[in-house]
Image (cartoon, one colour):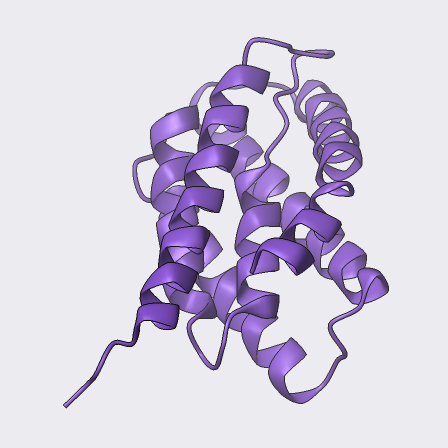
Length: 162
């Protein structure tokens, strides 16, 4: 039987509060577009939670961040849910067994995951709406840069908060 201690409940409440804060920041930054790009903060949140959470709960926190990302951005209803669950599982697994939980690891995994999210987000407009690849690529590059720059200050928050 699973017994929940007070510290585990407090730790889970901190993680949920952090995701909600990132969700509200995601919604807030959606109004500040740069070259048509909206920053993605929740993938960085999924990476941070997966890196510093215990055991294999990275997929759970990635799934939660993906649901919130789908709600805040719109578009395909399951795109970020599935993608961030896989990213959270991968980040949690890699930092649990292969890499240290350092700033360098966080930046590399965040850059790769944000780039993957931006590219996956650009595929439906290219395929279904006939958007040119160069226009989509310009938005993807701007969105990756914007998301990556804004996600860097989140590392100390993640490390301290979780």
